[in-house]
Image 1 (cartoon, rainbow over the protein chains, first blue to last red):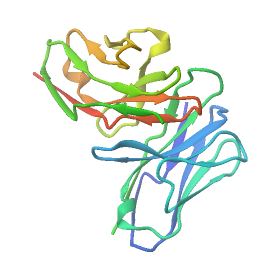
Image 2: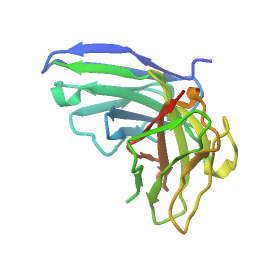
Image 3: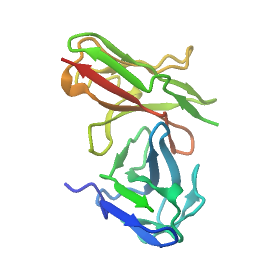
Length: 113
Length: 108
């Protein structure tokens, strides 16, 4: 019963380094999402993918890119990490149909020095 | 545009006391509203959604369209209820907009 799986759980980067956060879901959901969680600001949507092959910007997309590799996987890439991107990143997925909730992964705690 | 406001960042109550976490929203259409809970260092979990009209772990929330509110209530708080609570709204684009969260602490 994995649900949404994120890797890695923790990562420390230096400014300017790049990395990719991985997310996979096993619930056959069409929609997938990437959020960042910062103190006092709740969760903010970075990018989302309504279905395989499509991606759209959310509220805070600058500095990030995403890839919907297939129906299961949705990755988030930081091309040149900045200290302002220090955050906890959550991936989520959602099934189709009305009033479906989003299911979240455990999060990736990312620190950029 | 859709917006969710949780006016209280921190809320402390004593065990056995009633608790109400406030949530107000702004959305022009018919919203889908949810409460998510995040226990310490765990993933966000769905607590309840307005369409289900259910009570989960003793919590209830009623959608008040006139006041554009979706407050979360529990008559008798328990220590295990201590967590971060997020109110969230899903609009026509099926994107979730979260409030900034309320950290609930239930004191013994």
